[in-house]
Length: 288
Image 1 (cartoon, rainbow, N blue to C red):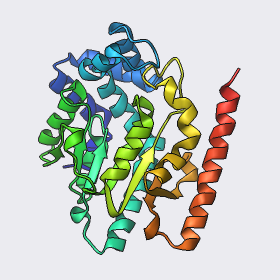
Image 2: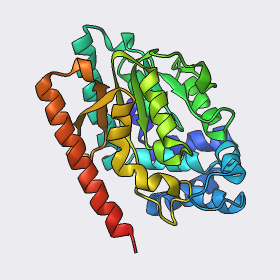
Image 3: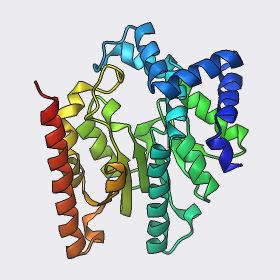
């Protein structure tokens, strides 16, 4: 697999056209629109399926299953430099984790939770990892990702039932910009804590604060929870150990407390306090 194909718009547009059976010209137009205004296609899906913005209901569920917008949005956003920085930093953290564990990258059990069109899954495969992919079962987006894996000749385990994921079954849970979409965020964090095994970690980004008209699938119920996410992970057994301030805390790394030294725990608590304070400030600025 050529890693360059993952960020080349012409290659990605060709994959979309062939997999979704859309005219090439239409795909290029949609891609250009998405480049100018991210979320354009998901917003169009929201109108098509009668979604009430920022509220999870049956119409929202149908959008996730049947809409094509997330294919465009996740691919087009992923190639941006700022989004690439998240993944590159996370790859560095994975390499350090493998070194701490004394194992090769391919020996780490990595769960890609909500990876949409599968770009991060493919990136990890390029670097010798063997990730497990999970997204909305039976959805257009998950079908597209499966087709990409086959197209690139990458064997990726795909899980269709979150309830089947084993407790403590993963050394790493990688979940980028997923929490803001979930109707029960605290339960999702508890589940992540359950899936992370001994000496494991979670690499997380979220956009819970970003509840805007152009992001109709970001749930309003999660916005006030944004400052509390480090505490929710602590309650789930994972301490904030590291983040990337250069990319607005994307990603945050959570680890088992007993894997951290006293000094690391103290620094982690300071980082959690700093993240909470900054998010509270942003949240207050959004209030009338």
